[in-house]
Amino acid sequence: MLGKAHRLPSYRRIAAGFTLLELLVVVSIISLMMAMLTPSLRTAREHAKQVLCASRLRQWGVTFNCYAAENEGMWPHCDGLDRGPRPLDHPRLSPEDLADWHGWVDLLPPMIGMQAWRDYPRFKRPNERTFYQCAAAQPFDGEGVYSYRPDRDGYFSYAMNSCLELDKNAWPPPDGVGYPAPSFLDTAKIVTPERVIVLFDQLLDPRHGFDGNQVYRAAGQHCGSYPKSFSARHRKNGSELGGNVLYADGHAEWQESLWKKHWDIAQEVPPREDPDWYPYPAVKQAESKRQRRR
Image 1 (cartoon, helix red, strand yellow):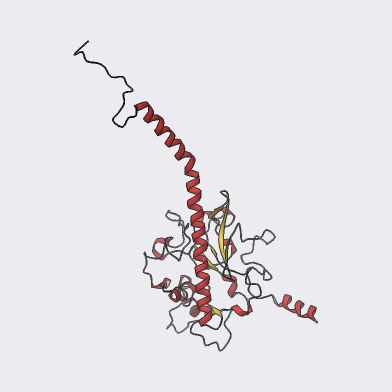
Image 2 (tube, one colour; image 1 turned 180 degrees about the vertical axis):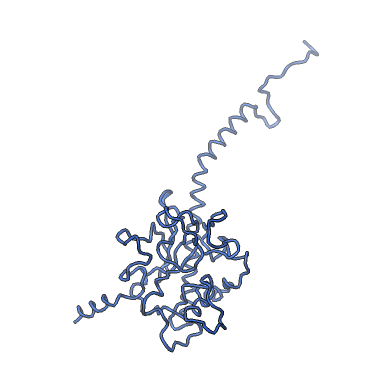
C-alpha cells in the first residue's frame, strides 16, 4: 500500500554492499586464518631471532680476530668487572684482578666503534636489541630469584668459554709479557679452531638451571662460564630447543646441548682432554703424538 511503512529484513544490506550475515562469515574466516597463521608467524619470529643471534656471534668473532691482529695473535681475558676485582691502584692487586679489568666485553667493542661494557651506566646496560646480547634473551621478570640485579647491573646472554684460561699454556700469563693488556690465549697454538668453543648462548632464567631441575641464582651474571650455563632458547625445525655457539675459526652454529652425556654430572668443568673446550692439546696427548711420529 502506498505510503505504508515497510519493515526492512534483518539481513539488510549495508552501504558497502554486504549483509550482516556475510560480514560475520568474513570475520569468522579471518579469525580462523589468524589462528592458523599465528603459529607460523611465531615460528618465523623465533627463527629470525635465532638467525640474528648467530649473526651477532659472528660479529663478535670478527672483533676477536681484530684484537688478535693487534696483540700478536693473543685473545683477551674471559672474565670482566662482573667478578669484582680490586681497583687498579690497590696495593694488593693480583694478576687475576688485573685480568678482570681487561675482559673481552670491555676490550673488543671499541675495536669496531662500539662502547665498552664498563662505560655504560647502571640501569642502562645493553639489552637484547643491541649487539651485546642474543636477540631472544630476556631475564626473568621476578623478584628475589637472582643473586644480583640484572636491571641495575646488566646481564650477559653470551658467555665466553672460561676453560680457555684454565689451560696451563693460557693461564697465568707468561712472565715478561708486555702486551697493552693481559692476554690469555695464543690463537696460533689452537689445534682445532673449528671445534674450540669461544662464545655461547648463556642461561638467563634462574629457574631453569642445569638440566632444568636446579635453581641457578647467578644466571647471566658473568661474561665467562662453563657448559652448564648453556641456554637452549632457540627452536630448530619448530620443536627442538638449542642455542648458538661461536667457534674459534669464526663460524657460528646451533647446538642442542654443550654438556656431553658421558661426563660426570657432578663436575663443573669439562675433562681436560676435551678438544671442544680446551684450545691446546693435553700434555699426554701431545707426548703420545710425538712418540707415534718417532
